[in-house]
Length: 287
Image (cartoon, rainbow, N blue to C red; front, side, top):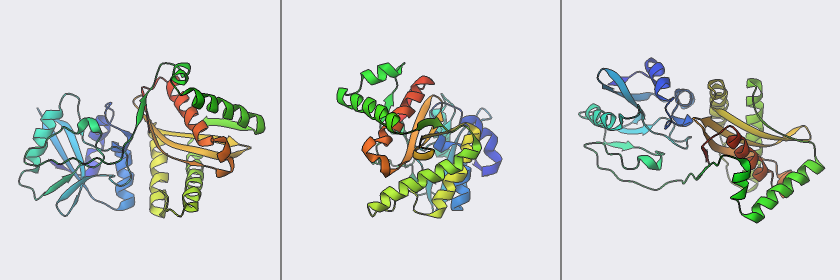
């Protein structure tokens, strides 16, 4: 059944709580994306025994369906109740039957869903960006023990050096009023580095920046934002823009002050973020 986007907020937010649903498939992310890009959602729902078993969050482009958020997301996909994957896919095929839909572009689906089949559609798979991840151990010491010895020593050395030479503070943003200033600083640092290489960088338009500012605040309120920063001599010197959901951290992008590049502050901040993930008992750190 085709649904109006605003009408299915409640059921969407119920489904997004399940473990396999990433922050990029939340209602909050989709809502901000649709608004900033001025797109109209094409949402199909599938019911099993009178209850919505899953949602297909698409937009329609001249008979081609793509996931909402296709150009700004790491992982995208369907939302369905655990144990109802096959029921959902069969129901989705029935919903699509008779509609003038010639192509389903399922870009950014996680690899574990590569074997899904939707009846009446011929499937082709293409390798795109690789998102590596690490399975986190129970302790920081166990994680360090698994690192290359030289790399581990370098991290320890640079932490000692930066603490010796500067007033440094690491923190995860925990106040809403700090979200936008921190994110804007990250954008500034990121763009400065990429433009020095004569490349556009990820935040090359005002629309993209505004999307992330809006989405980040809303995701903070929902508890999904994970914004890590290093403050050196009272100024933000490095930022990791991440998300956190269901014991997984998703590294999205970062910005680092080149004034400290000889101290590897990007590596230091990433190691601090991984340590935080381990300490809060996360299972996965996804890059």
